[in-house]
Image (cartoon, rainbow, N blue to C red; front, side):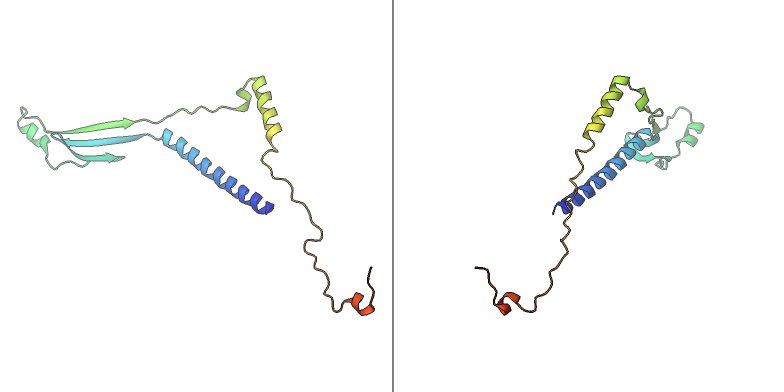
Length: 147
């Protein structure tokens, strides 16, 4: 039962470690990605929104009309939003800490390293031993009893 619990806890510890590593890597990736959000409006109506590409137009080509008659303004407009990601990551190392903090972290890690290890399983030398099959009860055959 104890070995089952230890293997069960170890399995969940490994799974939790992998999931947390993936979440942290995804968080770093998403914080450093930059992208462009482009919107096309026709009047006050939003026609299309596009990420990483150009937004589709509403089909009205107002550029040719404004060339012919410059007093008319185009009812269509494009808005572009650039969302910049983080481009500098702060990498801290153990050597950047003060000596007292290094000593404290090292002693804390050393003292608590064995807290989460399971106890060693006891060895039973006769665990898988099966006694020999008795063909006849020798005490009854010889009529020898302890009184």
